[in-house]
Length: 341
Image 1: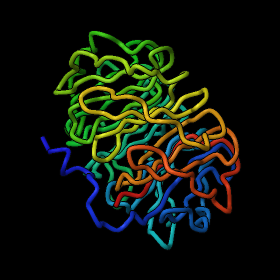
Image 2 (image 1 turned 30 degrees about the vertical axis):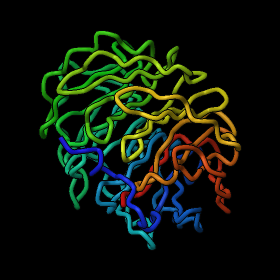
Image 3 (image 1 turned 45 degrees about the vertical axis):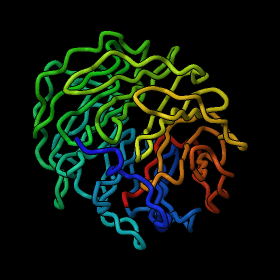
């Protein structure tokens, strides 16, 4: 297992991250991408072929060469070549096996060889090989299938795939090796309600689930199976949690939720530390997704009220919110991703 010190840790004197930030939202063009370098640049041109409707999730491939969005209607997933400075290429052909419902979650495997989409109808999750040619032939469904999938994540080593689900057990994890293995046993203490987001720590030693109902976030040791759930944070998130992310160095964990202050961030070291102070300028409404920049110096939150995306400097606490993009997303944002460094 890799040391946390080797996984996205901040280097003294390193140049700030310069890349791109993507947000998915509820009205046309459904996806907005901006250059990012300690602030928003001018929005890239929209893709020539737009996603068909509301974008629920967005992900860049690990090499940054592609971008995928899960959305309502149409093909339910759209993927495009991506080039920093140039933007969207011509949309890839849709997968030959259509999805059964809206694409609510999307993730690439760490080696970029596979892409997973979660949705709300059986079999609830579909995984396809991924290459420069686009979607390959869909892998066989898992057995048993999960329930309605709201979030999906691969472990950092690509050996496992996790799905946050709407119905009990609220989290389902399978071994992954160019196909699903036998589902791991459920954790002994289940999340308390619908799982809305899932994330592995950068070293793969922990797995976090954002969910409805108190305590709103559950984190477990992970080693080819669930360990005993960690103690809840002393200051809980304030409402139903919709997303969760670890910082790249694994030293912090962020949870976004439905009520003020809409985001809660805690130090993380095999357990929750004391919650950091809230940002001085809060996100404007229900927070739907969260992401740290690859170097860990910025944190982005997407939310239900204008300006729909808020980004802050991050250094063991929130800095002053960056200026809003000059071209705002047009309405509620549901997903956010930074281009990998």
